[in-house]
Amino acid sequence: MIRAVSRQILEVNHTENKYFEKAWLVVNPEYSCIGAGEIETEAGAYLGSVRPPYNLTNKKISVGTVINSVLSALGGGILAICCLYYGSL
Image 1 (cartoon, helix red, strand yellow):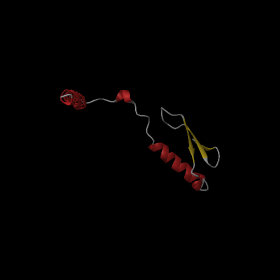
Image 2: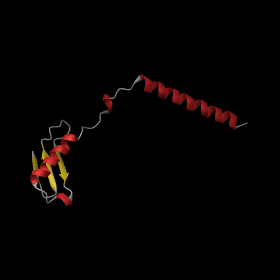
Image 3: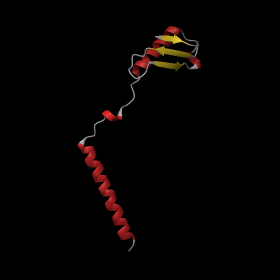
């Protein structure tokens, strides 16, 4: 349900999203004179395009990413040791 709190603020109840129960949208002053129906349509379209927050616990790390990270760390360590050894001569 979309309710106009004022000419510039829309309050959206029942966002149909498990993360958010309410949203407030501030209307750009240039468009505050446009009809309420068009503003509500745009608000619904915008909220439909918003995705829920990214949950890092569900992210899976591939074997290639782990190997790449380990090889990069080893390479950096070897480079640091070489710089320390050859830099002191």
